[in-house]
Image (cartoon, rainbow, N blue to C red; front, side, top):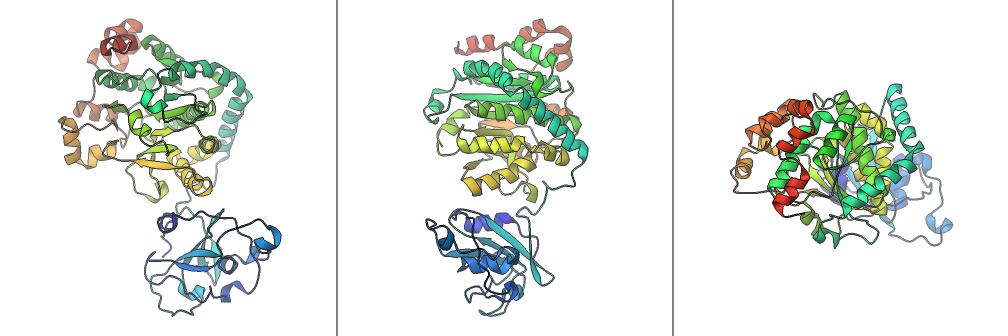
Length: 473
């Protein structure tokens, strides 16, 4: 049964910390019994067995089996003597002394203490190493144009990183003055505040304005919002509306048009701005909530995050249950990150993998694999946000009974994300159908483009007006 995911091993062994293990060669790997214990019997991951840890690893990793035991090399090493061996085979009835090649089609060896999980599959009478990620979505072949583009963007950013940080720092400090008080009490000692982060180009300006209107109508203070602008037109428009805005040439050049469909060139290009914005805010020491423009708010989400100060990252449930998004199924259009050493390393590594975002036309694939890896290796904590509190387009389309309670006002989630759509046209159509589109026809994107600040102010979209209306000034 090759179609077994690493996530199954996580489900069975989540309580285990994983370790780097030294191995000692003792016997030919294909003939070694694991402490007289057979592999797991039955179809699927129905259980697991304990085995002496070196025997387990020597059995499947002959090329690296001639290291000394840790006690002979590192006198200070401590830890359990056993590994957990997870195995699968559809039809096994070999008895307790069966050899592992006859007992299992696949093995996961997890050694508690401080290290790693090893995954192997039986092929041609030997154990072949297997990726922990069944999809292999962050593997090549990698087109050279993606490598070049990613290197160029990263080199441009890092060559001016001090200037970027210097210009961004006062903007974040101004936004952080409006960190919600309840959330501020849960921040770490080194956090400088909490910032709502968005990254858009002109093509999604109307979606952002609709979000602002929803927050204003619900009296949710969003003065801690900082928007990273992808082009000069949206930068000027955001300034007119009174939003704290940042733009710098080192972040790259982005077109004005909205993505036509999920995963197209514009979509993938804007992923760089979204990745760099989160990285920079975290790098400067701020907690952040990143969100796409197609959000509608009912309640202040910071209150939810404040209730779980032990969680470093929160992720909207994407709704997909495909292998490539397992095990956390994170939606990268809505997530919160506290400023910690672990999240700094995590977001830094995400930034380094933009070429794979281009390859797969998806930031979520990269984030999914790194999130699982950092959780296992470094203890990075994450929480999948309850879908009923933070619903997405998946639930709009596939859970009509639930969403009817949202639309008739009998239930109010924290927010709604109009994802699971093919592009901007569908987002507008569905938001209007759901009566979650609050902008007047005179305030559509074309009118806003034609008439500049006067139209934006006449549409009651200036944040100063919103604050005065809500008593937040």
